[in-house]
Image (cartoon, rainbow, N blue to C red):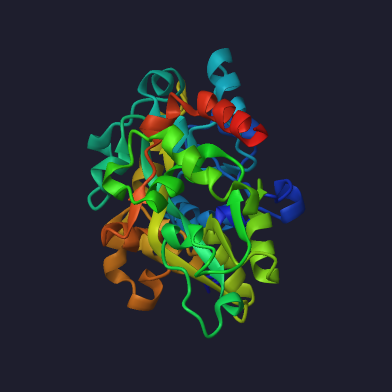
Length: 357
């Protein structure tokens, strides 16, 4: 029987190694995988996230194709770069962050180009089908609030409300990093989501200046949800996955999500340049984009499907827990990884300087 417990990558990124968690690593060792054409090595984020991928994707793939999936946890971009640079590539499919595949020049040196003629991708938006990665899972950065803080009162419903301390009293929380925080400030100023990019960086920082000293700046996502649940924060930006995971475990937790003006992020499936089993990698990617399999996975994990046809087979209650649904309805926007990928370092430096002054 399939496990119905909701699990998300961001809820388990602090997990330790696979052995400690009992993650199945497939039916072959890495050494035999290198020599065996009937294998494909998948590198993911580990923890319960990867356990669910084995349950909902890998088991049936092995059964139907005869290709064994060796799943390796603790993915790291530096490991991918080392493999590619040395020409000793042992991974075949990598669950890549959007920033890893956005810059075409950098991506071309790191990943194989996806042959979409070999992949069934109908239902996946074109924005999520990139030359060097196929979107597989969606997440959302959202506003969330503690319902007790606004009991009997109007609750915040937008980023503009986040800035309004008179009407919506309570401590604010925000990530201490420019990514997402800049977009949020501009939306709070009234910039329409469709007009966010290119970001007005200085305009965003000037808007943060208004409440900078009244914000609790956190740097780890678990902090945000723990502080919100305890009541130390009234409102914060956080990941939808963190909220959904907590509410699944503790349904009475006084937290509510505001989906409007959320920011969609995507994980991609990519093939490291020099993979010795590219054909098998393409088959696994195609398998993981299937709408029915993604629907089953979304129902079990709370992770949004990248194939929007998956939403057609889900009930309304489940759909309304998934970022893909709100992206499709136009209530959340897509994070522009293309814009960020060539600017992140300079923006982090600018942000850190701003925090000091």
